[in-house]
Length: 311
Image 1 (tube, rainbow, N blue to C red):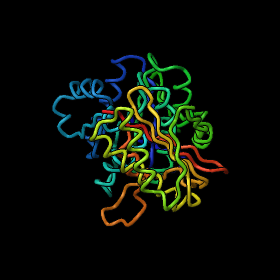
Image 2 (image 1 turned 90 degrees about the vertical axis):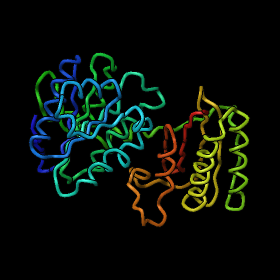
Image 3 (image 1 turned 90 degrees about the horizontal axis):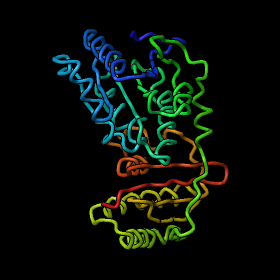
């Protein structure tokens, strides 16, 4: 499994479509071992059970690898680019880097999946021109055919049945457009209109509604920051006012801010934040604190939705 590039771009982003654990282990360990042998920094970011499969098969070579539980680090797919992939690659400037990243697995919810696909499409923008190979495994046994089709659309290279080829269906921009779906809110959502003068009231409103719906004190602190960032963004960048909504969904509290602004940067919130950076941290912080973030933007405005576990 080489780091062959297409169209002269040093960035390589293959999807590995695997059919059983043997194939998964064989191809991922070969990818890792080749990278270690070439002196390339290697990270493996997959769900915990898959981590153990690869680590056990690698043996002593695994000591050279950075291991990341994607079930934790990538619970919110919007965190993966800045906090997993860029964090590792930026720490190894000047050398080629290899990463295995598995953001889609059986058990992802219907709410999470669109964010996963958007993440895979945005990787191509985030790493264009960089000396990085990011291999993304997909389990053909347990994932629906539609998910495998999306993998072909978000990866310029596909490895399947032992063959490596350019994807005939690669079109990440079309994927981003397809999953930029309106986010209807439930009829029972608690709603408040706000402007600059009502920013404190919007935070108090959201906290009170979440507390009434059973959110723990610790998570209320996270919600306080999320609401502050979302509502401030609406005032500063979204036309000066907006609407905040709160409701419960299963074991999560959902907080949504809607305004008339246009979110023009698809990678907003996924750029790493420098320690000396002034401003531009709002959506990054929302992604960092949330268990899931969904975004919809069009000519009429932008909706940002944050999911946080109650406890």
